[in-house]
Amino acid sequence: MKDETDALTQYQNAAKALQNYDSKGVALFWDACSKMSTKHCLLAEALKVYRMVVKMHMDAGRFNQAAKDWKEIAQMEEKEGQLKAAMDAWEQAGKCYDAENAKA
Image (cartoon, rainbow, N blue to C red):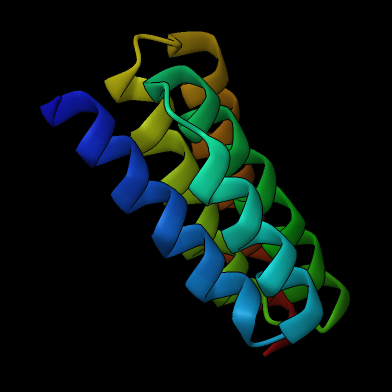
């Protein structure tokens, strides 16, 4: 049960991140959340939403925030034992920080 609660928390955090961009999307997101019952589905959906939020931040030139979101993705992937995906996410976070420094 604790794993499912942790997954739900990650899912809720992803929804909060999305809320700044699209309130209609958040309503759909919460509806989907209420129907999910397994840890795997919750984490998969949370990761999907975090990636959507990263794209929005990058499109808006908010590379520091995108990097923070990539770090969150990396930590979630690590926790699930998905080391290749975690390494890729850490690398993307680094690229976002580099882009922010280049912009300055």
